[in-house]
Every structure is written in structure tokens, then in C-alpha cells.
Image (cartoon, rainbow, N blue to C red; front, side, top):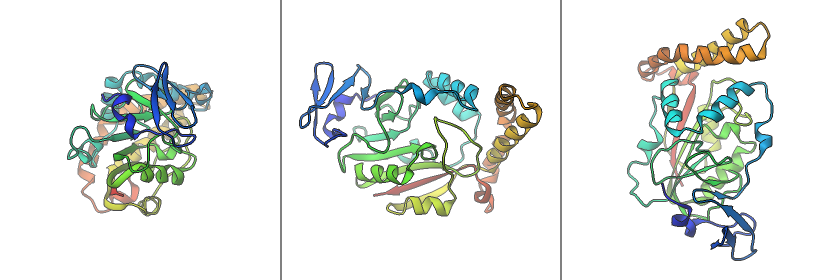
Length: 283
């Protein structure tokens, strides 16, 4: 994967927008002298916060997701087997961009889409090159060729500001790939705030020139998601721990059923109850 040093020319200080330069133990701003800690693999624009992982109603599932994210290959396998993705993928979307392009995956987790992509997240999962706040990204104006953000905006307190940041860092004509949820239950990562219809998605991304908007994950996944939550609630007998264990059990049990979305994606009514939508646009 690309190192921070390879894209240093695209980075800026989040305090004053000054240029970053290499320092003894990381990087520093040439204008305000703000220091940024760095390891061999990651630049820390923000430091990981233990408060993000405090106790919550879905704590068992949340901790399980955190554990899986420590193992990128396992994360990728589970991500593609427990759900059925039927839309154009991020990898397909950026396939025409040559090696050496500056591509940023915001809220990447441990996912490795392509080796030259810069992964950005609030936590330093394996493969993350920059820890940063999506509301204040450490990239210069018009410095990035493509931005990817999959199933992230529902976890962001101010998605309008986050989208404005994505637009700011994109070059004119730069590519945007976004995935957001429609029909889905509560899932913290670390918070969960919003859902979008197709019209709501267009309103959120109205400053971009739309190329495609379609189903990323279809209605069967939406059904099994809600059904597993309902069944887990019914048979948990009001035990939160048992409820979370049953959620995982039914998630695995219903995974083969989700394959029906490969057929239903062709039905005109499927978007009405889709699980996730994807949007491709340009600045």
C-alpha cells in the first residue's frame, strides 16, 4: 500500500492548512508547527479514543466487529459472504484510474480495495494509513482523484459537512463513490444516526454530477436483517446478551437466502425496499 510519504504533497495541517513536513517522530506543520505523531504505517491526525468503545446496547456485536477488523482478509471474506452485494463495487468504479492516482477510502476499516488506495479511519485498523475526522480531512483542496465512502455517512453526526469535505478535496472531475443505508436496523460504529431514500441521497449529494444511483444491497438483505433482529428479540426473553448472540446466529443462518438479491435486483420495485444504495458522481 502507498505510504504517507508518497502522498505528502496532498496533505495539509487541519489547524491552519499549512504544508506538512517530515519530522523526527512524525510530521509537523511548516506554518503553525503543530506536530503529528506517526508510525511506520500510520499518520495520526487524531488519536484513537477509548470513549468510542464504551459500553452500549449492542456491545457484544460491536466488539465482534472490532475484532474482525483486526484481520483484513477475514473481514473481507465475512463482508462478502454474510451479505450479497449486487451493485457496482468501489473496485469496479475506480478500475479505470491508473496506478499512482490519489484515491482515498474514508471510513475504510480494515478493507483493502486496491493496494494503492489511502485508507482513512478514526481508528488505526490494519491497513489504515491516516487516522482523521471525516469532518476535517487532512488533504489539500482539489488534491484527490477519487473518494470512496462505504456505509460510513450513517455513523457521522454531520453528513452534510462530511460530504462538503469530500467535495473540497476532490479535483475537478474527480470521482465520488458513496454507499448509504435505507432499510437497516441500528448498528453502532461507534454511533448510528441517519438513513437515506434515493431522493434523500440525491439531495445530500446534489453538488456532484450524478453518473449512477442504484441498489448496492437488495431487498432480501433488508428483509433478513430486520427478521434476524425480530427473531433475536422474540427469543431473547429480554436478555440483551442472548439477543446479541442470536443476532449473530441468524445472520449466519440467513446468509444463503440473501443470494436471491441477484435475481431481485432486476425487478423495478426492488429499490423501494433496498438495504443499501450506491452513488457514483463527479465534482
